[in-house]
Image (tube, rainbow, N blue to C red; front, top):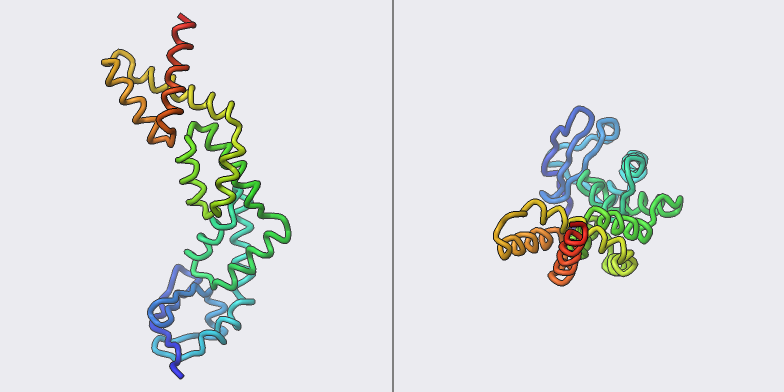
Length: 212
């Protein structure tokens, strides 16, 4: 039976060690845990057994890190998973943390998706850009679809018109054709479809004419 091998051990900051197993799995281990069971480069170990030993020891720090993130702002579960993975926690530890947060009702991906989508719309982002942002947060497709469907169309349309007004003022005085192209391109970069952009621009122009 092939044994797992510690292929690298190196300091990571003042209080942690970064341990690499089989040249691919990396674990960030605090020095107090590492001193309890130090690992040396080239050492053979049973990774499954070591993971079972490590899990209850790193779980409190992982949970504290997740709670700290939630205290700063709302996060999706997938977003917390990504950040804990980047911090090199065990997958089982991450699963335990997310289970605890959901059980304590500190995580609600559906509510997060809905509120974040609405916030993006108010910040003048179109649906394709909002979808991209929610995917980046690690949310599942069905929750993203539902959040986009539940957007308040009136608020989203008003935000699009405000953006069109701002862009039209920025390019005021240019050749009308080029002005329209630039405004459409800028709105596309914000995630608005061609149809939504045209509607918002036409509304913005009409409002400007009515004011004058």
